[in-house]
Length: 251
Image 1 (tube, rainbow, N blue to C red):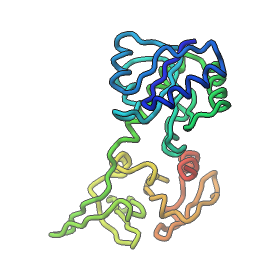
Image 2 (image 1 turned 90 degrees about the horizontal axis):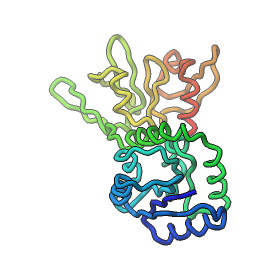
Image 3 (image 1 turned 120 degrees about the vertical axis):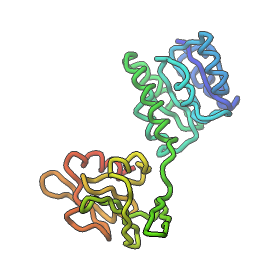
C-alpha cells in the first residue's frame, strides 16, 4: 500500500513514517509534501496513493483547500494539533483524525479503520469535507445595524438573546430585553448567524446558546428550554428539531 504524507513539520513527517513502518512494513510512503501549492501541483501532475495523511494546518493555509482544487477519491487520515471541538465537523467526513503527537496505537487503530472502509464512500466524504470547511470559514454577522427613526443602533451578535417572529415582523431581543425590529425573515437570518451560537428551535424563534439556562422533556416528544426572556409558549423545541438541538447543545 502506498501512502502520501502532507505535513509541513519535517520531524512530524519523519515520526509518522517511523510509526507506519512499525505498524505495517507493507505501507510505503511514496511522497511527502509540505504545502497546499506543492500538493496540488503534484496531484495535477499525476501523484497518486492509496491513503493520505494530511495535517490540517500547513505553511500556506488549511489543507482543506487542497480538496477544493483537486478531484480525488483517495481516503484521508487527518493529523492535527487542533482540539476536538475545532475539527468536529471533519470527524465524520474522513477515515479518522489523529491528534499530535501521533501515538502508535492511535495510528494502528486508524489504519485498521481505513481497511474496513468502502472505497465508494470516499468521494462523498471528501465533498463533505470541503463543504464543512467552507461553512467553518464563512463570515457570520458580528453585529446588526438597526434604524430606529433617525437613529441607527448597533447591536453586537453576542448581546442577542434571541430572534422571534411576532405580529408579522422579526424582533431582535437583547440580553437586556431591548426589542428591535430587523429587516430579515428567520430563514434569511439562519445562514447569517454562527450555527455554533444560534439555533432555530421552532418556526418562531432562533435562540442564542448563552441565553439557555436549562432544557427538559416536554410532551409529544418535544423539549422545553428555560431562558430569562422567552415566554413558555415560545420556548418549545419542535419535535423534528429535537435531535439536532440535543447535538448542538452538547458541543
